[in-house]
Length: 167
Image (cartoon, rainbow, N blue to C red; front, side):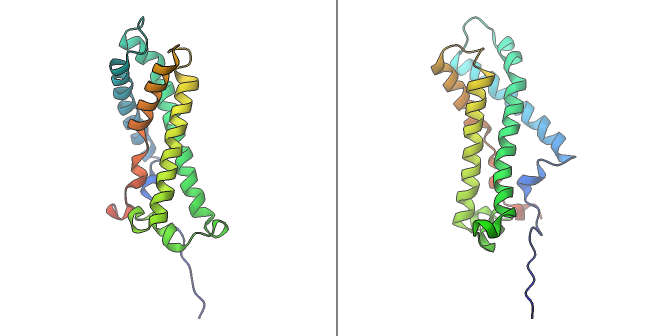
């Protein structure tokens, strides 16, 4: 009897974040959360002495928000590539099931998901340090502090949510 494999029967919850109509909710939620984090970073680190918090916020929020979403997409592409290139990468069905359905069911699944979350975080740091705040925060140390704070607090932790909780 021929064995039949069913790939991607369960749609991972982390991938739903990037498809309409959920994308509009995700974008709005990210904007609100990023706004709170940018304002908090201003008051925690006082990165620019001459600008008040509202000017600092207005000059940075759009880039922080867009680069954060881009970084989340980069992390999701890594996970999607693991699922799509399963045979090429030599990943077992258990690992793919863990990535797509329950990250905590397989050690390699959680490692791959955490790796994608960390890569997203690194992208957030580099995008914000090099593009968002390079003109706004002249001193390097405060720019690093703000970029790292934003990255740590806005990492795509939803990648770790088990899809089985929602089905």
